[in-house]
Length: 136
Image 1 (cartoon, rainbow, N blue to C red):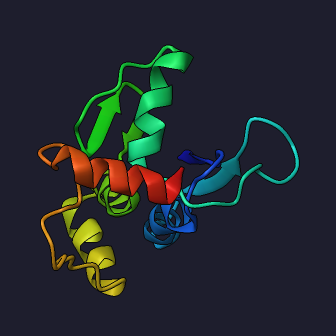
Image 2 (cartoon, rainbow, N blue to C red):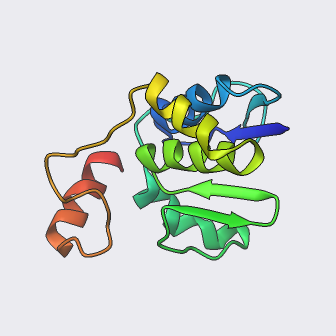
């Protein structure tokens, strides 16, 4: 199976490295990093699902609030930890759940965030604005 991990302006390294790490443990996966054009990705500042969601419609995609979205052959995720969730779910689909669980254990992925502030859904407007100010 061939997996393409897109690189885009304001992506964070973990957006790409998290899913890559999961899939690197999976036999039969070829993982490629892709960008819209050759060369460095412009703007090396961090980005997240907060900034990407607004621009999805510009490319004809429908923004949704789900952490992991499966749409035919395309699987997407909304943020750093969701990228790891996506890769584990994809691995379970094409391999089996036991393999995905073994990889989750191998990378010691057991998220326990100290705050309930990991999604724009339900976050107060002032917190969303502050977060966007950090990554804009």
